[in-house]
Length: 498
Image: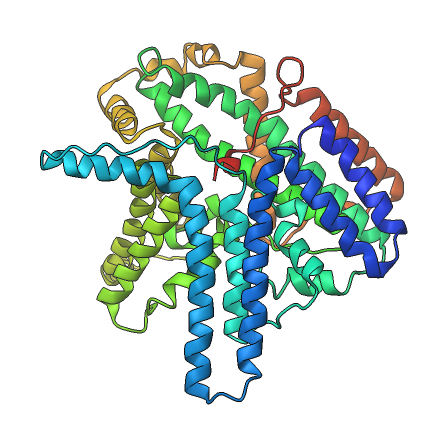
């Protein structure tokens, strides 16, 4: 079931209304049933995978807690707890590997042996990638590790824990919640609150705007250009690549915002997954503000266990590269994703190595790092670097990404920016201008966010007639200017494939 579907617009109000009238002691059971139904609308049998991951991590949590309460000496307790954590990780990562990476691994193995003239007849598995498997697997694994680190208790109520793993607003594309935040809220449900409902609905409206009005409109242009590299070359691909950076931001941020809003209506607060990332002045800052839940997950459960920055600069750089290479692989079973992750890791390593030189230049030239001009240069530079890496993310294959880069460099056709040719790339002039207006609105909202101004709080403080007028206008604008497709074929969210 998609957020941007008629089914969800029927499903969600029913869930909310029943949730509000149910006794507090059984609210989690209703949300659990709703969450499994939500997921099973894609593929009912794959609900068994969520259940399997849930059972494994639930039992592992109880076992770790039992070891802690045992009479074993501290050293033996530590060893036993590590074995339980290792078992939980191996089984869950094994399930994820089979469904997401087995064909990629076998194909890679075949190619490697072919280089030394050894032919392998490896099988090809007919597997449909379960929606959201990377997200709920990581969320479940973080619970196991948090118990090991004494950061959370072992949940005794299986159904409440199952809801933590499968909570429908953030089930298939995050944010990847921590047990310290979400599980505790599910344990003690909040009282029904009008302010939560109002704030949640405003968040959902903004998320629908990002997805339906902006992301899906931009997708028409990007898909057209990237889908025909012979017809659309050079500047067409430059524009398409820049727009893809906005598309994936609006698409993913749109999903996360709708998820936050839906949870808020139910009185549950999810973490904010994005913080105006394209206003960052460095790639490292960008990754602190983009897909925050995943970045922090890798920091806490991979980077720090590897040694973080505690073992010297060389080890720190290696650890960062490992994290970003793994992050690339997490996004997809293809070398293009690995290159994308590696590039973003390399940007940061080079940036840190060159930092003393940059500091020296700022001092010698008497530059003001706090000036608007200095910040703008760094924001633009960061966007260019990140946007270049998006080519590998968006291209179907690594070779195609290289073809796109070659076309951008070698084909000189700047006139397409001025002769109206861009209006022939999927979007007519009216829709193209509407897209640009939407991007301006996005930029203004992000600028306000960076200044600590929350637009929805400003709206709530206005008179009731203004609030209702604004909401009515927002709904009308989304319905009027949204990209719905023929016969209302709602578009998938990009991150569903991960």
